Amino acid sequence: RVQIDDMRFVSEERGTRAAGWFDDFIQDRKGSESVQSLVLEGGITGWANAGPDYVAWMVDYDADFWQKPKESRSKA
Image (cartoon, rainbow, N blue to C red):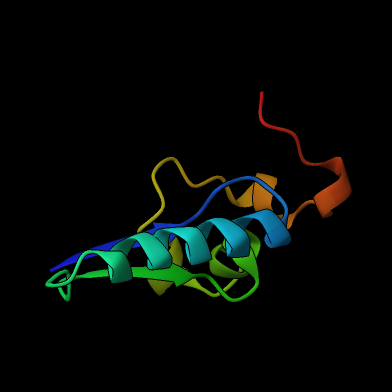
């Protein structure tokens, strides 16, 4: 089973739209029941703030970065 999570650093609207397009792509290919397109509720920020069980799945997680207000975050 393959699961694709949309975890991009983009607006929630674009992430949701892209996940919808990917779901359409999956549905167009009959027999692709083993692939899912998911959208993270609250986006990647919601995931990062959901607790240790979630951040354990994030590569190079930096708590200081995710605890900053969204407006002051930037990927260097």
